[in-house]
Amino acid sequence: MMAVMTRWWAVAVWFAAASAALASGSLSAQDGDALGQVTYERWCAGCHGLDGTGDGPGAGYMLPRPRDFTQALYQIRTTASGDLPTDDDILAIIDRGMPGTTMPGWEALLSNDEREALVQYLKTFSRFFSADEIPQPLEFSRATRSNADVLAEGERLFREVADCAACHGDGGRGDGESSPALVDDGDFPIPAADLTENWLFNGGGEAEDIYRRLLTGLDGTPMPSLADVITAGVITDEQLWAIAHYVRSLSPDNPPGITEVVRGVLFEDAPLPSSVDDEAWDEIEGAYLPLAGQIIVMPRWFHPRVDGVWVQAAHDGETVAVRVSWSDPNNSPDPEWADWKSQVIALMQPKEGDPPDEGPTPDQLVVQFPMQMPEGMERPFFLRGDNRRPVYIWQWQSDRDGALEGEARGIGTEAFLSGGQDLTVDASHADGQWQVMFTRPLVTEDENDLDFVIGEAIPMALFAWDGDNGESGTRGAVSSWYFLFLEEATPATVFVAPALAMILTAALGFLVVGRAQKRERQSGKIKSETPNS
Ligand code: HEC
Ligand code: HEC
Image (tube, rainbow, N blue to C red; front, side, top):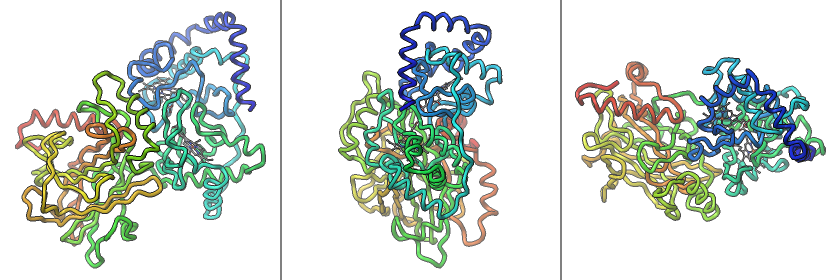
């Protein structure tokens, strides 16, 4: 309550003393500000706008939108909910950026002086900051130890007491019943964070970070602060730590490393997993492949729901099985998400002539391979190939039984083969996650099917769509090329190493697409007999 009052109080003072505030604002605008202003206009205004209102030229294609600094709403603070951030808070976010959003980190790019000047300059956009009132950080207790009992207690509180599951869902993937209706203070739809991907938390993914966010809240978003609940004695500080430890435990111990190769484990004696939830999958290591919005072909898509997929693979010398798992809060199309969908489309396709909402659309997954095993490092264009180098694809969608095999020579040219389908699929949606398992004989009669070769790096790319996030056609998430490597009976390491050495290192986020684009431009120039490594 105190927090809300602080803000109104500040507004009242601002009204009463607008001219005085203006005067003192210009007084402080001295040398430091000149550096702050120059740095801001060069690096920040493109997103945050020259006047700090968050409407720079790039802003219309971003969700969350760049922050409007005139409102002085800061998510990542050490201060109480509703209070202004400290200078150190603002500096820390400028340094680190906000993972999971377009806000970059600047520590490596800008000098100390520049970043400190930026802190002061940002504050001049808002009259809420004053030299007389210095925001005070909260006192945070020291982390408790985590163990199985603590995690069980954390899970109970998460689900039953602190109401986290209402937004984040029982499994933490952002599929709680309130999630389709969540909006931020600017009235923009905002997803409840996927708590199984802590490397994308805005304010850091360790238990300490989570504990702080729970105490301070994320101002400007629906994510509440638990400070009042603690003051009221509903939960103790120790229990808050239990929740933080539990949330931390939902993500892997380390953020997934950058992998180029999905290993197809050889099942020599045991049968291959027979269904999508076969326990045999639990024994197979998954590779995390980051996805990014498709921004090469029009209409582009800057707001993909699926930011990465986990891929597992196995084979028994005759059949290959591939399981793809990814977070998606619902099984599209779902009427509960219809509003969300039309809002996202309206916000992300603001130009005239952009395609309208097509009505209900399903979730989809495409796994893509070259039509034939390539020679050397030569690969088709990652967006569905071209005439010279077509691709072979598996396509699954949530509103249809079975999967299709097809081929394509460029995006939009997908043709699905009728009859003689060698591909089977099993899919399930639970707790905000899709899992889709494909199986196919390694070799088929069909000459348009890729024959999977054991012991070689088979190029593979993935594409995912969340229908209720407004995704269909070219509007979806894409990966660049990765490799599927079906293990041989002899230890395969000997063969993997040289292949790995040739493979380029993939980058996350937009870099995936940027690089693929560049690679394609280069390979376009190089004659086909030259491997374009
Ligand atoms: C590519 C776009 C982009 C650029 C460039 C950019 N920002 Fe941001 N920034 C964002 C977005 C988007 C958000 C809001 C993220 C959210 O709400 O989760 C944001 C949020 C912020 C916040 C709010 C942090 C908080 O705790 O809520 C600060 C401070 C900030 N940016 C400072 C800067 C500064 C300083 C620069 C220039 C050095 C800069 N930004 C450049 C996109 C950008
Ligand atoms: C009313 C809905 C709602 C409830 C209830 C809620 N959250 Fe959130 N939470 C959100 C939203 C929305 C975000 C995303 C904010 C953003 O993207 O800036 C979020 C983000 C988070 C994050 C990521 C923080 C970061 O740094 O990005 C964590 C961790 C989290 N919530 C944990 C919890 C826990 C634990 C609880 C229960 C104590 C909880 N949330 C209750 C809506 C909610």
